[in-house]
Length: 382
Length: 48
Image (cartoon, rainbow over all chains, first blue to last red; front, side, top):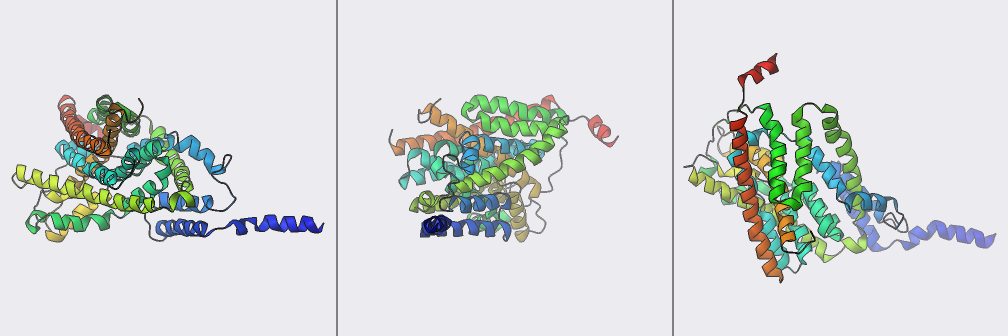
């Protein structure tokens, strides 16, 4: 009886006895993510489940990511198979209105320039000694697009998924703090004051809106076949939105499916943040490179905006180049606010929204191009 | 393939490819707008 009592008590305290400092640090990091999500409102839909997942997976002996662990099941079925980010893409497509882009298609090029940070960061990551595919996963934080970052890193560097996702979502929410100083450094006051005029709403036919996602899927997927899942799911969601005949599917995509998958995806990302995998110098490097990637996106976007400004005889305010990233519509609002600071008569919002919508497509296309080039180079299988 | 060859190749083709695909998409949008121009009846139908 006495030995049974001792064994029972030992079992009860086994968790406490197994608790190591690194578990405590990770539980604190998980709590910090919860604080940032709940109290500061930084991407709470993702940071709350990620933070909670990080806490759960660092409870000693709970084995949440063990062979039969509760989180392991969702990770294997949803993240390793890349299904979760793709389902989220359907929701994003259903929520996205490409009208500003359809009204002003040449602005889509700013959405391409806004992705250059991905490729420049890739070079930096390689210079810092990252393995090839690890460098790709880090660089794609520059897509400024959570699901794209998750898709690519779960494909090529699943061991870095936690760090890459946390960096991607944290910096996306910090866009209003990251972008303005770069805008000020790279533009003159005269450029910031350029008035682009009130963008006239151009009516777009319903047929154009319906054919657009179908045509983009066909053309872009043929040009970058490895990116077909990314492009196809975003455009499927958009087709559900624009077709006007499948309201239930559209509603399910942007609500039930996205909400459920966001919860599970967040938990799974948090579950990759086990102490022995996350507490490494490499994680700090990933966070730093993520910041660099988004800064470079902004910088190249603005520089491209300056080129467009020159080519159009000063009709384009280079600030809208900063909106060529995927953080929609946050980045467009930042541009509008910054433009208004220097000229109260400047209304850049609609122009910036076009660039921002271009950035949304641009991030997916950049990832698709990257995947196809990697396949062409024989770095990844066909 | 060494890291630098890999990096520069992916960066150069990636940036050019992204720009090229998006430029083609912008032409595609212009084409769609030409083929399916907005008809004023659509706005009337919306109001109706």
